[in-house]
Length: 349
Image 1 (cartoon, rainbow, N blue to C red):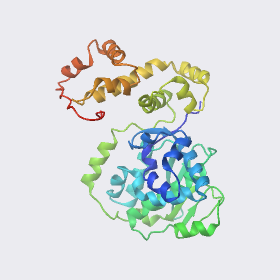
Image 2: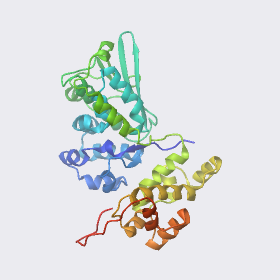
Image 3: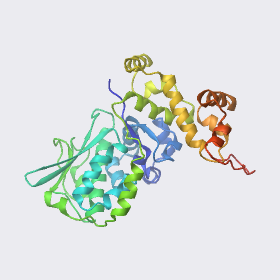
Image 4: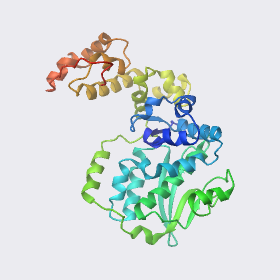
């Protein structure tokens, strides 16, 4: 079966500011495609790639800017790479940095692959989207192109230009507008999306290099779970983790996001020997353990975060999992609870 790829909210870094500059209401645009505003508050939260493409397309249409994705990518610059940027900028050479990009990209985006090929003295840094027919994918590809150029400039300096820029599709506006935005002409209807440059670039040292910092960030990134595009259980768990705080963690909602009917999802899970309820329990347990590690966590708020209608429901479930209450589990883990301070408003977890 075909599973829906996920991306991290980091891919929409700077969206509020850029959309506002384009004359759009960011919150309304997010609501229009069914993406809660709070989902962008955590850069590691997940949402379907189809929603990402749909958002870019809707913004392009309503702003009247056919190059919305391209301009947004230039606006984001290299910040869209998050912690990965530290790894790339502190690699020994540009070639090492691009190998790190290729190897780690799945941590942030399961919808595409980065390729790095060399032929006839030229390097082809490519970006291949798996679902090329998704509505709005043109905008997403042009954003990726701009992000790639900005990354190379972060590695080599602000005046770097590739030998050629390839876009898989035809131009959606006057080609002069593309050249003006990117600083050089673009080849349209190309074999794929890619930046082409001389292979000698790979041996050039990065503009800044701190190998100790690079190793520190690599270790941090290794704690991230790769965005799975082929393991059904992993993908369902990722969606459940995203849906639980909003109270929408149902099999029907998961099936809808994955572009399946509930019956198709049940059949796919049956073939893999999976239980939706067990996956939900697994996710709830993992999230419960993470939040209970915080000494001042409020059990009532945690229960709501995990999708329980009341505290007693969560406590009964926890008793079933561990044969003890959440508070006793904290004690067993050596976690000293801290008293909650009285104050106004709801306390954050």
